[in-house]
Length: 168
Image (cartoon, rainbow, N blue to C red; front, side, top):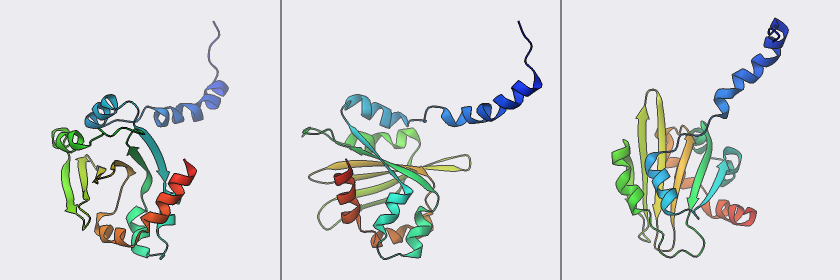
C-alpha cells in the first residue's frame, strides 16, 4: 500500500473543506412529519435574487430585511388535494422549540404567522400562510433582519407569484 504524499494531501484539501457544506439539510421534526403525511407536497426554492424582484419600489428597508436570506423553501399543497392542512404544523412548532413572532389575520381572513427558533447564535424561521383556498409553509434558509419586518408591506407578491407559477 502506498503512503499518501504531501502533494496528494494538498490536492485533496479543498475537497475536504467542501464536505461539511454537502451534508444533508437539517429538517425540523414537525416539517419532516408533515412531508411524511403529505408525500406529494410540492417544494419550491426561491432564491434571494428572485425575492428581490418583489421589491418593485426598490425600498431599502426591504433589501435590509432579506439581506442575509439565502433562499426560501415553499411547501405548497399537493395538486388536487382538498384535504391538505397545515394545522398540525402550527400545533407542532412549539414542541420543536419555535416561538411565535407574528400572528395576524388579514382583511380576507387569511392567517399569517412567523415563527422563530433560537439555537446558539442562529435563528431559524418558518412562516405559515393559512388561507381559505390554499395553505403554504415558508421555511427561511438564512437570517431575516426582524427590525425591517414592516418592509414586507412594500413587496409585490402578485408579480412574484406570477413568476413562480410561470416558471414551475
